[in-house]
Amino acid sequence: MEIDGRDFLKTPSVKTVRFGGSVAETLEKHKHGDSSDYELLKHQLVDPEIKDAQIINWLQEFRTCVTHLTKDHEQLIYTILRLPWLGRSQAVVDEYLAFLGNLVSAQTVYLCACLNMVVSHFTPKRVTICEGGVDISDSDDEDENLPRNFDHCHQALQLIIRYVPSTSRFLMPILQESFPFIQKSSRTLDEDVSADEPTRTTVMAHPVAERLDTLMAVLMAYIKDICYVDGSFHVERTKELYRDLLTVFDKLILPTHASCHVQYTLFYLCSFKPALAEAFLDHLWKILQNPSLPAVLRQAAAGYLGSFLARAKFIPLSTVWACLDLLISWIHQYIDSQDSCGKQVCCDVSLHGPFYTSCQAVFYTIIFRHRAMLEANMKKGLEYLQSLNLERVVMCQLNPLRVCLPSITNMFAAITRKYQVVFCYTIIERNNRCVLPVVRSSAGGDCVTTNTNPLDSFFPFDPYLLKRSGQLIEPLYQVWDDLLDTEPFPTKRGQQGSREDEDDFLYGETPQAEGIVGLTPNSYDSNFRSPSSLGSPPNSLQRPF
Image (cartoon, rainbow, N blue to C red; front, side):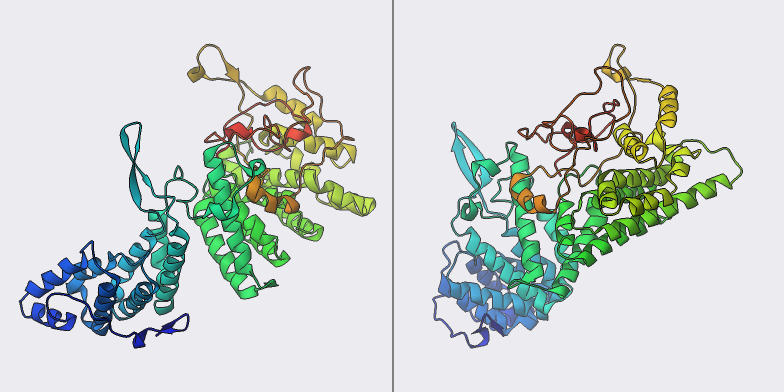
């Protein structure tokens, strides 16, 4: 067996001082009921003063009789797995890796134990430090051997995967269980930040945001390294990574409401090739139109679909048209089904949630992409918008304008009025008269508010706020281009003001602000906002993950 050109089967034997017989003899005696040498062997393996030569000698012997190390010798194996092999000489590391390879290939029953051991070394050991006369337990982040140890752990995982191809099934749950808590330092969360010290302009003020920024930068660098080998795009490696990230998206990201940054891993990957973006859009579309899936997931898929179409610069207009055609066709079919049921249809989010989020996705996409549709060929663009039959959508009994976010409703109305595609203001005025205020008893007093976000909407590709990793997203991202020539629907005096200093669509977040402190979005200001605030709930109500 060879690793990096080194033949481990030809490793020379090293003479050392030890007690008891050979490993083979000890195992044979233990099999016949004599455990004295067996216990002595385990005792010598846990000796804190054990030398490199001793470790090498033991490992060489264990390798020769690895087929005998069955489940009956579980405690002995666990003792071997606790040997301090990291931070030792390269000879010890090589011999230990060779032993791991032999063990998992001959005794797969120990696969998870080996994986747990390797993964545990990705988190620096804990040390006790004294602050103000108080002993505090913390991670040893300053160990200079951490990068080298991490490399050896990666080699161990690669070796195990080589011998047991199904390792990933068992590795992922172990990684999830072992991942450090978010309050740990950036170094504990698996990056060596000393090699690329951030400048003051790229440091986030909030410590958790800074750690998230660091992790996102590491993850995006990994994505680039996987997909591009020596500057050339690698199709098969990219396909495999895309499938892995899509699995994570389905299991974790899509069901997590108001995630703000992690989903940008797919955004970044999809920017490499148009086929990747189209595959992601197709995946979202299949989720949206699948009636057997929970409505909350279908609604989330619609939010991702609209936000991705609106914000990704790398998506060509032809793909935007194709997606809008699919969405609007499904919306019209849904209206047909409701009209043909013979019953009075009412505006009910709990019954028609996927329909309303699909309508909002269409409105949102048109708001962002209408200029691109019209500027190349105004006549062709207008004919396309008119072919969508948006007037039927906004005037149907389901009344989507009543449910969609007011900021999107009003901007959509302004744009479609300007180009005389559809007139929404009569419906908006009627909806405003029908909205009943809700008294929030938990707020105390007679505080009155109105739920203007009944869909609990959020836009997953709202502006990316992390500074360091955001440098990779910025050239791919469609920012809001203020529509100076549109006249939004008038509101009460004092409710509409210019917020030119706001960061894109985020209400209440100036370019200098860095707070990312909220947990969940909720109902918020129902007044129409300037175009610079169009989009998701205020940034203070979003969560950083």
